[in-house]
Image 1 (cartoon, helix red, strand yellow):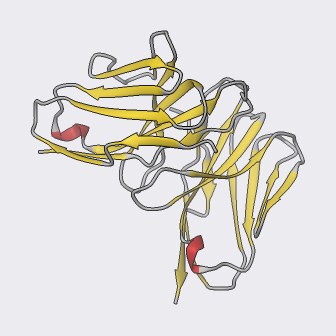
Image 2 (tube, one colour):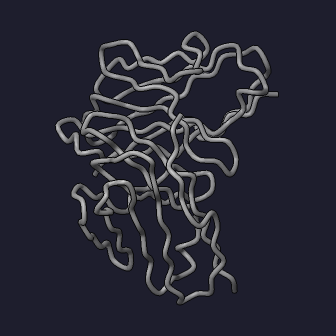
Length: 117
Length: 111
């Protein structure tokens, strides 16, 4: 149980294009999903917290107009990197908390490697 | 954002050896979690700790929630090749709050 599916696993795009990453909880409902960014050999840095049916909460320094988050249902959250540039190239990982189990456990997707040319 | 300090940053061990790593914070947490990440993958939850002083095992892995609430420890006994990866600790203050991740410990097994 508690499987989080993230798609795509890898994407290469041209500078200036937008990229959408999907995060789905397959066998549970997730009231809260989190989006992280990870640079090579570094830890996970939280970008934003996404709650179903409400606006995402962004961490300091993360541009909300650049990284659009939509949490339309209890099983799906999307991250759209708008007008991507090479400096946006990174490993993006989503995670989800099981609804009704707010005991801290987060389950992670397999990540999306974004490369902007 | 805030990060937890993990030690050591990297470890090079031989198969069969035991491994110890720790995670320290300047502030207290009420939940400690340990994750393992393989290259190109998302982190996988290993152990969750909810009470100061708690000692929890998951197979060859044992983790402890420090009594001060500012640290946690992870031990791996009799390491095997599939233990290779990066281990992250994570702390959480409240049940609905975000996780703060450690800086990671990279484990390598020398042939």
